[in-house]
Length: 298
Length: 317
Image (cartoon, rainbow over all chains, first blue to last red; front, side, top):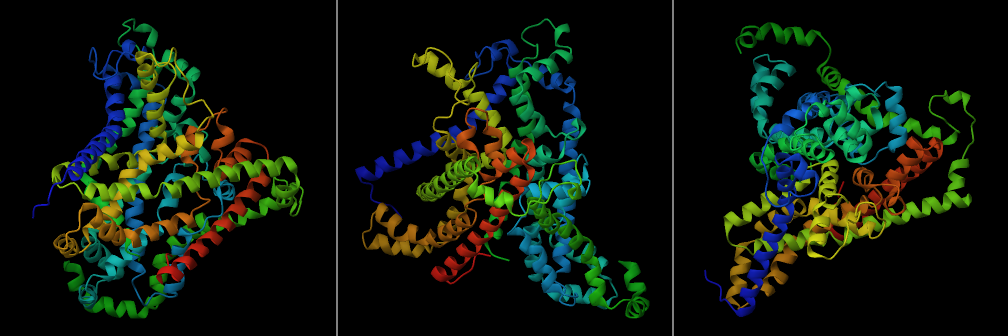
């Protein structure tokens, strides 16, 4: 169907396209800018001479930063919490969501509400911190994982999803003598894969991006995450300079490859954002699906 | 699968002799329920710290019981009243600006739905939702790269154009702090915020538009009379949720952007509680403020829920 194109119509469309092109550039350019600064001559970058395109390209920064004290440990913690935390969240939500579909469960609706209502209140950050301290969750890797096992929102998603699967499937397995665990692992888990994938993606991004829990709970450097280290680098120029010196910067007299505060900051930023940049375009539809099912109330 | 089939007869017998199924199912859920209790309910017990003059490191029984002193001091102690007032002002300002700008994703979705080039549309959607998935630390890293005083992009451009004669430290200033925070929030959230509305627009009956065209309605008439009413219900639900979260504006964004210079305007409730409780010395006072905040936000949630029931006949929780 063709729409009559008036003068006003055409102006509108031109402005509309212009707006989206501009805003999209605004969203993308910062990532590009960080990237070209990490692969350009460190000297030029620090002096602010790399603006629109890379100059004197080298990739040494990505090797150099591994030598910085504590950075590879932070990368390890970030990866570990993302992998372990995501697995725990997916399995926990899947299993509990599944159990909550069992009408025979003792006190089912009470316990379901007991879990779900925690979405709507929290005691406040200080009382939470005190209890985490008492539970020995400070300077403890488990603090990154244990609290995320039960995520009410994901449990609602799984429960709704399982309830939409024909019950016959589970019943016939029961007839064959399959226990609850067998039904879960062999029948339910394969069937809920679409929703489990969506949950996994959301959980992984939120684990990778998580930051404030480190601020509250971790004082020992070995538990720092990449996000936290990046925050420190952005704020503590003096200590950053010291770290760079201890990283063997003096042995390297080539100015274009010598680590600078700018090169360390931009390179660590890229390391933090690269997993997201790689994962996001491929899984975008999962994200969109996730928010849409979230909109349908459980 | 084989063992199940083979052992079928036996296992039915065995199960009927054991624990009744209803308790067995409960036992499966029990470890998770314990976790919920520990991490979500037990912190409520932490509220009693607001009744003491507690210092971390001491035993609670060794610290003096002060009753409701901290709650009273919020209103009675002039310095603390002023502090809490300032923080409340920031909180309310940020949330109100957030509610005002909540129409932006709506406009974004409507404008995007007017574009017919599918490839372009997809690309815009993918690229503009990206910032939503990076952390606030990374947003700050970007802000730093763009606005820092030594080699920030904006300073370079301004100096290059001759509009500034030297670098300005845009991040360490307290002018327009609220506006800056809202703009960063918009940069991060606009594309993603529009997704829901885009989906709502797609689900509008195409025949409505065709009928309107036959009646001679132009583009803007259709936007206003079909698209806008079509997404209003979605907007309403999200609006109610933002009312429910009016004083929960989180602390991550403000935490990463705060510095001694902008502190007066950037400290929202959670950040203030963190700064006084964890960094400062007044742990119990921070607990009291934190506790009041939790109570008020439950009140707001119930209010928004009631409002939603009244207006749309549907609850949001």
